[in-house]
Length: 381
Image (cartoon, rainbow, N blue to C red):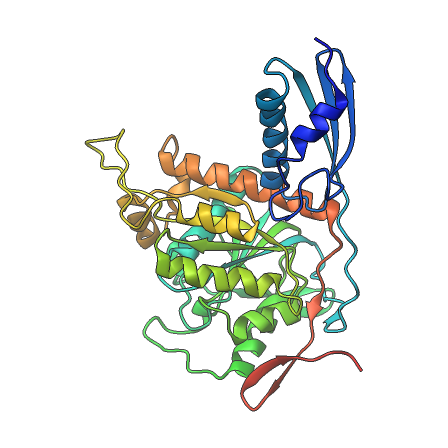
């Protein structure tokens, strides 16, 4: 059968790229359509490098041609990415990179209690198992938990001399380098600091540390969207952010604010994706059953609305809590559903980082001034 190019274009007018109002042909996304008998080649131009957007566009094109033109057509979709140039943001200044660190990934959550620190710890050990050099900065000043999760709560960073300067040597556990304010306080001691003091402590752990060569530095941020977040993004050019949420509506509402913060023009940090924690519960005696205690596919629906990828789902399993309390992240256990879940998440994070570095310019750090107790973004004069 010989396919008609005009008929194919008419069929493609019935679908659009996710997030765009116009159909693929009208928006100019479809660059060219070639037919060779029963073979079709569609050249597609997208403005986003997001893997889930590309995959959905390809699937929509193939399905539409099969449904509306010829069900046995051999369809090939060539996708090219051409991100639109953004005008220079006067609120941004060049960030101060840390020598030797390739990628800095912020792990955030809109609200507390969704397992952000647990996800950070398990993601770190999974990346280390995959052969990457990994560090974790525990930026949760008021509730540091990394020393407990890595079983190093009694350790203290030592001082080393690097190029004539005295620097902190991060504590190492399970092949992950760790720094946390928890190393410098007593377990029962509350950290009662104002924003500037917390920011100063973070800067010391970031720039006065001998991190060495790292492929990934994961930053475990506090819950919410506050002063610490702004201080971190003022100090560092963040490669991308990962947002952790549970499926329930309350957590998703706060996660949406977290994504919005990173994507705002004033911050402009790429969001690598959303991780859904406590996605479902499977009892040991019923391994084929899934109980959606906190709701079903909430993070997936939110990700589609915000046009960011879902990096993976983590089941609600008692051992993940026990492992964190005992200081041995659950992802270290082999041949378990948790190991599989975190391996999928780690692979997706790496892939999103690679695509982000190939298609977007380096992130810049924002210039922030603190006045009357409030943080505001201030442009260059």
